[in-house]
Length: 358
Ligand SMILES: *Cc1c(COP(=O)(O)O)cnc(C)c1O
Image 1 (tube, protein in one colour):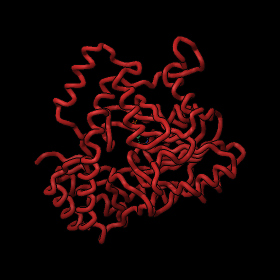
Image 2 (cartoon, rainbow, N blue to C red; image 1 turned 180 degrees about the vertical axis):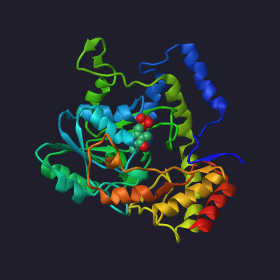
Image 3 (spheres, rainbow, N blue to C red; image 1 turned 45 degrees about the vertical axis):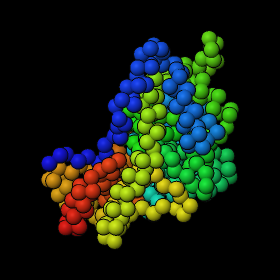
Image 4 (cartoon, helix red, strand yellow; image 1 turned 30 degrees about the vertical axis):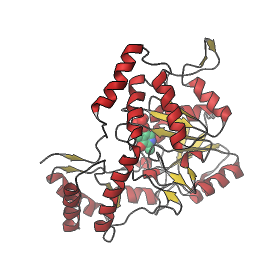
């Protein structure tokens, strides 16, 4: 039987991509803010309903640019341990110190009360993650940031297209970052973006991402976070299919819900969320049950992923942190296969194996 992975990148009809490639060939303008990159920036700004956005090489560089644009250095950044490692490693790579706050057991996002308890004079920022596309408690985090004069960054790598209380999730906080990696809901093979409501910040990372140039002038110390025309072209084609991609995933999630949500714990979406169906995590009562289910699925050539395991505070080279909720959930959570046009027959097989095993 065909191997089923936790995800499978959406690929548009090849002719549509080839049309763009043909045009890039004729122009021989391959990178450095070519027409595909400019058009993608324009289309993303409209689709995501944000003040500004810059397409970059990947989501990790997006985070590093955000930290840099906010002039965070040699300071503590309070962050969540329940995420992909890139959230933490970009803090450490920028020579800042991650401090792990625990997560809320329902949304799996950072717990504002835990954040507030960890604030010291060395704390300069909060880096929160809308994990699995579930909005953080943005109001509470905004209040804490304002009360203590902290910067607020959101890693929105999972939250493409998510809206909360009638506006784009990217409009909350000082800066939000996205990843358009192939495993993400919307992808450009490799890619990412930085977005902020502030024109001032936008002007900083817009220059920083291209070596600190402004035309031929040297303005500031920058880095190369540009992405190519070929990647942007994939984004332009995929963006045309975004409604289809989300609708197909929604269908699959509703199927899983109908069969599994009685028997398994699921994260809870806050009210007033327009969700993107980016992931389908289920939480088991123990790691033992999870491993049993995992082995049964793998024996049937189905490969879910232990997103996110281990809790990042439990990794050897990251600072320690007491995060009992995150450590416990990390051991018990599994993301089930979810991608555009996953066959119903496969979804039913997965449901049956899980229900038979637990
Ligand atoms: C994927 C991901 C990233 C990194 O994005 P890349 O584009 O792969 O560099 C960062 N944070 C989270 C939460 C992610 O899932």
